[in-house]
Image (cartoon, rainbow, N blue to C red; front, side, top):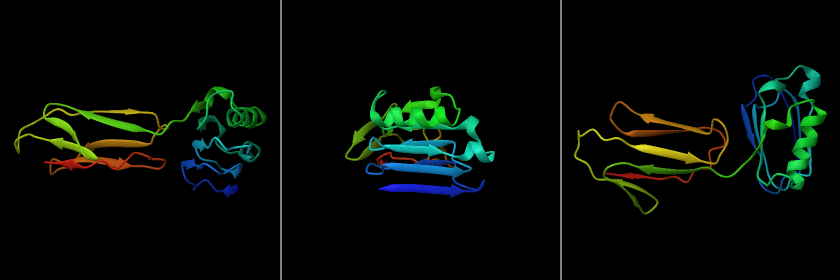
Length: 160
């Protein structure tokens, strides 16, 4: 499967290409985060010729350093005169939550605390890509996880 995109400055800030896509060409203005599958055999960035934003791109590869997909990403960045240090290993993001009264339950977490009692919650994220998600609290006192592009986190529920 091939993918080719010619975008303007109003394009997405990130692009995630799933397994099976082999040929990816980005021209015009490209996203600052690109996630390539392990199946990538061709990757081209033509924005640098058109005044794109090459300095802020991070490329994540869903395969180990030295793999064919990784080498393909390195070659594309070198051809575009970009630093290959901008290539990172991509692993799907996972979240763990801990705190007093929090236990894992089915596909989420369970909180056993009295209504109105302040508690401290710690959420740890591993893997993923830069800018995948953020969390905070809403005025009603609940937990809000803002899903952004590239978010591959399993949906986890809160049970009170």
